[in-house]
Length: 195
Image (cartoon, rainbow, N blue to C red):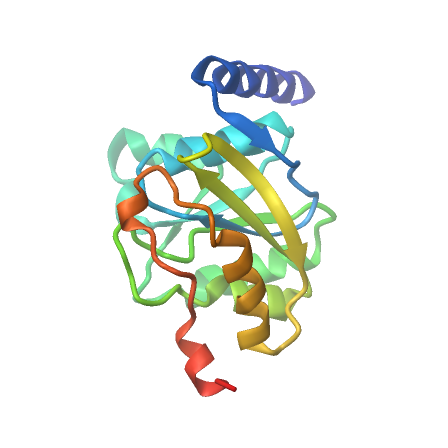
């Protein structure tokens, strides 16, 4: 396993150098990793490069319909977990149970849940972090600066608006691969706590 991780790390770093993308920060041992802006199918590759370059093996929630045929095998092998968005409960409960018993638990969530513009982010990353006590780590890909990686982390305070203000401040200058598809981070739950 250690040899495989070294190979993955060397491959990831080599690909980043060859593509002239700059890696920022390192992946932590534990946390809920937010993957944003989610504007391209290449975001999956970017996540793998970020994780492998830090010798990390995160799990990634992916829409279950992508797990058909050979691509499903690849997704499973690279940490993909199928998620039925109409009935996510069982998958989330199993992940919460797993998070309790592991020293190293990394879960990647793309809260936009779509590569197109959306009005609201899905709140799963915030809820899971709140239920597990794990920090939220802000991962990013920014096509304008050709940089990707990990930004700051924080533990949810329970004040959704204040926490999302932190998220918005970090992502204010991040645009993804396709900037026209990027929308401001906002949770529907914020309207319940507007100040």
